[in-house]
Length: 120
Length: 194
Image (cartoon, rainbow over all chains, first blue to last red; front, side, top):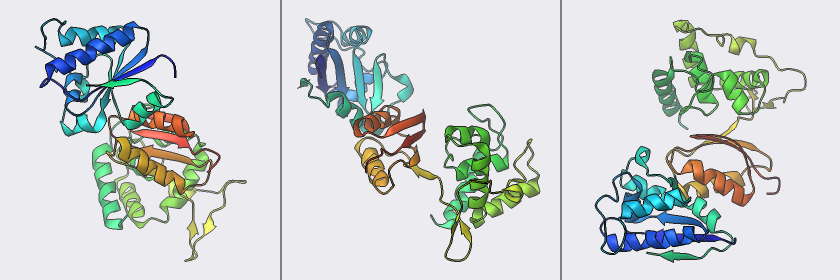
């Protein structure tokens, strides 16, 4: 499937540098007119709720909240691992823009035809 | 399912849903309507019988007749139905005579003869996967569908928050047809090849 790109992010607020770089790359992909998905799993799902990225602002980068908002505004999608989200008892009514809770099948379908990906 | 468990679930459904509104047409659900909805596999999202039949892509009369024949073979439902009769359904009810009035229209599916001489009807195929999600859900669903003949229409109930995205995606990938999605209910038709 031409023009798709996946960024897998498995860390959240406890590793702000990796989370930030993941969204910098995601914005590069969506800015390059790729259909881009950030897949948040394990601790990364904490970033999918409102306030989850609050206060994360690594030197030399925009704040994570702004990076994520830009990503959503440009049409990027954030897939949020359903069992990871449930396990942490997060609130599905507080998802940020562009985020949707999915199971593995949704990600498999998106990547089915062979999609480049990078993990953080 | 053990009958005591089924009886308890019926009681819970009645307690929870009688007096609530059908999400499709807003009609108040009486005792009989809730029992019909549970029998159709809608214990988590009951609808009035007309809307439930519409959702199943069946005509109302056929659905009523199937339901009536099925209910007559289930003691726990019959007891709950009788109790609803004796309560005279506090809400407007047009289902009270369902069991008495059921007829088999010309051309309708003829029920099989059960081993004990009772009429038996093929039940609607409904699978309730509760809060299973992600890989567990699709594997369980795949296993269930493998047991069914091609073309079978199935209602899946899944409350996982990822299911609204996951079930349609999985169906697209493997070639089954999504007929209707009203989370937590998903109606599908198994693909024509096994």
